[in-house]
Image (cartoon, rainbow, N blue to C red; front, side):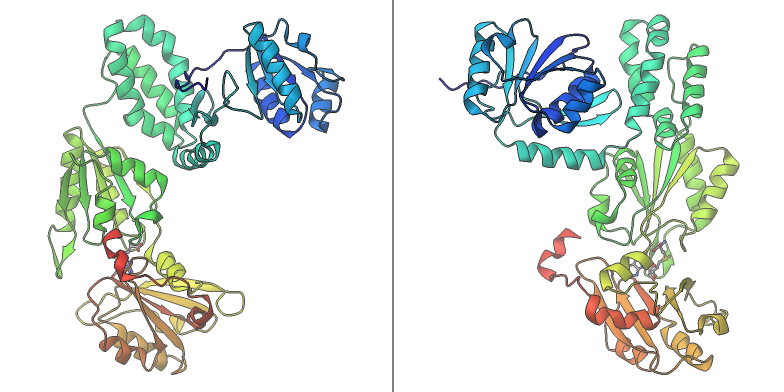
Length: 473
Ligand SMILES: C[S@@+](CC[C@H](N)C(=O)[O-])C[C@H]1O[C@@H](n2cnc3c(N)ncnc32)[C@H](O)[C@@H]1O
């Protein structure tokens, strides 16, 4: 009768337990690798062995019996892995193991196995096991890959830190308070220190908290995350940005942040729009800085979410200067700047061995109708120049570059709402781009790229968004 009951997930401690592996091919090698880590005493039975199994046997890490497996081989083992390439032998071993109440796994038949080997995401002591109960092992592996990319490596360090302090916490805190304590440590500023590589600081903070006898390891003060939200496509967020977006209590965001990115935040968080809207600031920069200091002072986790990268024309430096002065803990998470995002999605490499040996990022923002830039530097050949905030100043920029020596037909392109499904590209030359852009309605952000690399778009352009999927970004 087929077994329809779900399997029971458990983690086995096999240190010094006898485990039999029948077969010594590639599947067996994979099993043995993990079994060796678990400290099991391994015996392999197989007439021929993969070179790795032979090496392990020569190094004394396992015993290899060089012959066909027989029924009695399963006697005295805690677990049996039937991983030969002969179905009849695997079936014989499974039956023999069943008779003796020894648990068996058949590499060729999940349904006839007592246990299944899950796909595992591992961060030191922390292990996440995924199983489809034999229904779809490939799906389990796909999920494993996704989780592996998503779960920071530093979770292993966090588990180690908790392990190192486990006994001390047990001795100092009554049982009823321990779970709350660990929740605050593992999901608070101490964990953030671990995630940003400040292990020694995290260890010190945890030790001090315990020294003080305090039961609240999070200081009353909160913290600020200055996070780059990328140029628009939510898939371009970094995994650290995503984690911090999801854990913030308050989100301070610019106009450039796509709604799809804001949707990723905790819906219970407070959202404050602080960016530019219709050419006026909803909040002056000083007020934004003060607001962050005040909110963090109330113990909140404040996410300052900016378009692109916070340190590229994002005034990120000014914002954290005030935090540093006020002693508010903060971290900065880089984002994909519009320059990289737009260039990639427009098929315009910013540098190229033949056309551009350097790239310069410049602001095209007009001050009192003027643009004070080093035009003779910017008008040199062999480089790419990327102008941010340059829609209004586009005619001046093109004119100045021509006056300073670039040819009339020098290539230039405007990428409008780059990386989103509304992306548009206007390609031209210094002489005709302003006219071409004037014929367009440019409401969203736009980036000007000047240089010979622009021509490569003809062959390298790949992103042709369909407006049907507009709701996605
Ligand atoms: C205040 S700057 C912020 C730049 C941002 N920190 C970055 O690293 O991309 C805003 C300018 O970035 C450019 N920009 C941002 N997102 C863009 C996008 N999706 N498409 C085109 N340009 C973009 C535009 O030039 C816009 O005027």
